[in-house]
Amino acid sequence: MNQLNLDHAHAAIEFNKNEPRVDWHDETLWFVRTKRDRAVAQLPEWEQLREAASQIKNHVLSNMHDLLAQFEENAKRNGITVHWATDGAEHNAIIHDLIQKAGATRMVKSKSMLTEECHLNDYLTRHGIEVIDSDLGERIVQMRKEPPSHIVLPAIHLTKADVGETFHEHLGTEKGATDPQYLTEAARQHLRETFLTRKVALTGVNFAIAETGGFVVCTNEGNADMGAHLADVHIAAMGFEKIIPRAEHLGVFLRLLARSATGQPITTFSSHFHRPRPGQEMHIVIVDNGRSRQLGRPDFRNSLKCIRCAACMNTCPVYRRSGGHSYHSAVAGPIGSILAPNLDMKLNADLPFASTLCGSCSNVCPVKIDIHDQLYKWRQVLMQEGYGPTSKTVSMKAMATVLESPRLYRMAGKVGRGVLRFAPVTVENRFNPWYNQREMPEPPAESFRDWYINNKKA
Image (cartoon, rainbow, N blue to C red; front, side):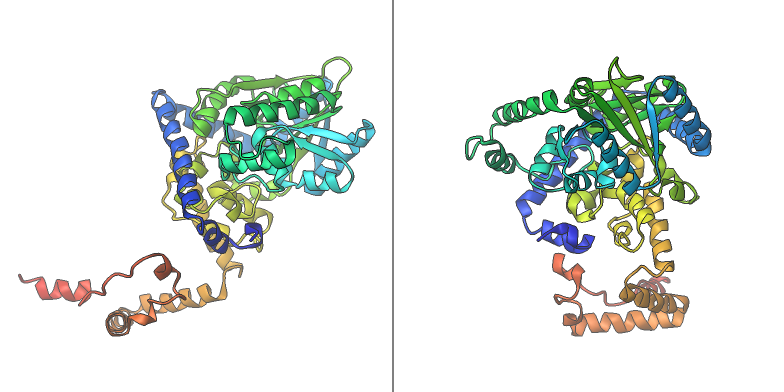
């Protein structure tokens, strides 16, 4: 069953049917989280770096217009053509037009979560443009016609056997092959031809620098560099929140990004692009797509500080055991659950509830986004706007009535204990999701209040 057609709870049930895969997924992501912890422990100034990054981003959010205008002016002076897109549709149309003007029918693309958000690949394919994702994980899921399940590790939900089967089908590798070196070499040979023959390359943007008009792309495979340096046209796509004020601020963010993402001191390639090489066109497409609306929400604007490290995903107990596809959104996990409702409250009303509110996501966030607080606030907004399930609305009102009256509360507790003791079937049935996963506890003989009164003198 396609998890993308289900709400989070039901998609998580589908994912959990394969228990060995769930355990492996959970353990692998926790391994990445522990690598992050070891890397962080090596920097005594880690918390100062987090605070510096958070304050820089606060400055960006408060001066967004001026910084974007400064970036555009400097980028144009460098010979870069700047485009502005209101939404995903306009972003896709601009890129399609640039490809057509270049006389191309094929494009190589490195990792870009913005293009996933805007569904660029599907759009270009429908218009006769062949798109090849050059990031290895992205290429694997593209072959399988799946979206990425993680913003840093796109194919983390797949095993070596899954990849071997996919490569056998699409690249003609030996059936049953699972050796990573053999499979990686097959992918390398496959992508080499792509890099050498594509006239147009698209990259994402990790950081855009207002002071210089340049931008930085971080990868571990060098695929963004290969595509951009060999192509006649380099297109960079960025959400406007990727802007930072000055080049010196890169030292803060680059030290935070890779350590938070994979536990590395720095990404293997941190490539700086400031101007097109002679004979090359360079374009940058700056996209809103609901970001202005989020910027105007006082309770949620801090979500735009995100640098897409995925640390919150790696630590989240819900994400680790429900899989990225259960979030039916380009960005999964805790950060996706506070970004997605801004795009479509009705479609993504389930996501803020996919959390224990444990706060681990906020604790590991390198730019100090109050993620778990925003998840709680989104729940309030969604219920107030009528996007919560009717059953929850009714049950919460009933609970509020009971909790407002001490006498009614005591009576309800007494009745409930009696029912659970003498008619446990009322909760021990398949209609109770809690019971489906756990053993119900024995009901207490008396309430804490009664116990306290009876034992107070003793």
